[in-house]
Image (cartoon, rainbow, N blue to C red; front, side):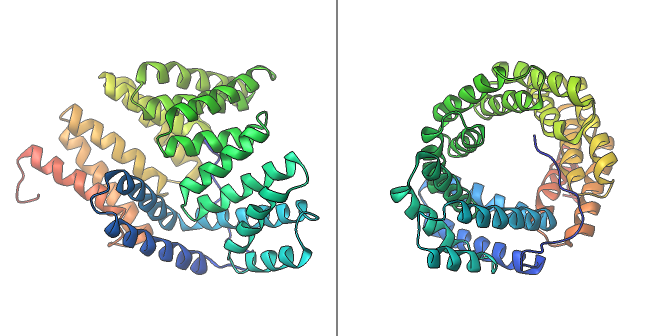
Length: 346
């Protein structure tokens, strides 16, 4: 669950969308080289494939990526000021100047140095957390987890650090570690005012962890608890609950409750259409899910085909006809034709 960015304006932290795109494409090429070098190492390849997909998504949603990059650069600059006194001023100034050009490595090195020489636990925890966010931005998830873990251990009552550590542990399949962080977070949120959205997010985090492991029985009630809390405090059909609704729908598909799954997918489609517009790329994932439910599980081929074609139309209009994101829909459309026996179309 996360708030969706207002689709307006671009970066103003000395970086244009084109510069952001160039940085992402450089990361994309680096990961491709690493994937070729990792042939035969299944564990490494699995992580690199995840990283590759992350970069593809960032390029696809360039405007959102630009806003996220701008926010990261601003927060990093603010944190450089917070650690003043722990490092020489000239190093802090140099790191800040590099940030204005989109270069984060210098700041990352500064925060790494503070971890070993910081003057207080809170300063060291802050440096570890910020170093983790910068490592994550470079898609170096193993370092990000190490740093987030340091921050969470030093300040175990800090929800921000617990979320970061738990989320990254989940990405790296360190599920027991992730569960420990998320359960600790849930305990903190339960002690707060009942019905707050932070408690809903805490239930959602734990549900996603169980879902990732295929523990659907454990995940389902947590998703429902999350939705109940959020709907009571914020009302139904809010963008923040779209991902939770989608995940709950996927559990219903797994259990064979196709009507319930369809209702939730339609609800998500209504939310995205209302808040983002009918041509937004978020619509594509919902239509793909709905069409896949129709053809793969219910043999509703005639209803699935126009949904897949609508996905292609939205994606091609937004990203061009040769973008990698189109391949997912084309692959599913190919299987639809195959199941129908329309081999020439296939």
